[in-house]
Length: 262
Ligand code: ZN
Image (cartoon, rainbow, N blue to C red; front, top):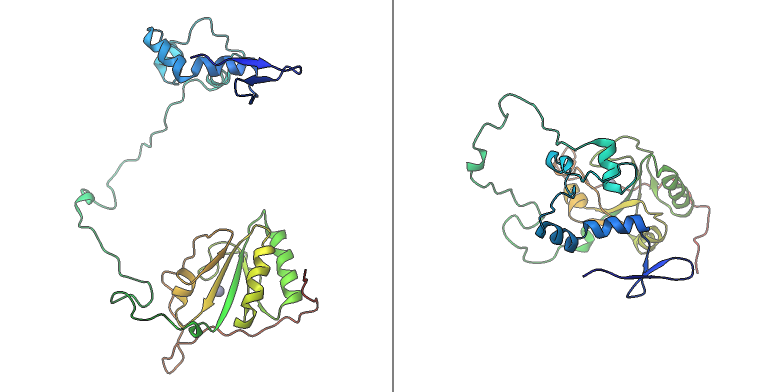
């Protein structure tokens, strides 16, 4: 059952499949010592005292021959820290939820996917319900310079409505962000442009329809990855006559750089 190793001229060890084995001899000694086959052999032989767990008994049974200075990573960790004990909260009092909450009946949330409140829709939504788009760029302390670069590049190239820097959560956006809004005709250019120029940032592209909650939660396109959006309670703003007001796009930057083409 034992693995065998050979060494090349540089002393680098290879296993029988010619893969480089990077462990040092000491590492390998420990890896062999702790390998499942070795463990079961040892346990089977009644020599269960290998220090495989960090509990008190294991500590007590570390073989006396073990050199605590540098005989392996686990031993070094144990020598530094002693046995690890779980931290158990000592909170006292009554749960705010009361007791036996497991016996509550299962609760069914309301259906929120637009158009499905009474079952599946009978026909697709018209794509012309989308009046414009927003692109939201999320950043943090580590990535704001990337955001600044993309913001400048976009503002120099596209006739967009460019918003302020938001260093705090704003609206449904839960991390620092900036955004620009754009008209539907720019979509076939802006989608590939942000795909190639995201610099790894998380980007939310959402349409603007008469349903801002759906725009942010259900009609989205994400570049790179998604992140939470606090839009569950969003409601469309209404004018004095009670009509839904859809987000307007009013471009506020003047392009000065021709788009790069291959
Ligand atoms: Zn938006």
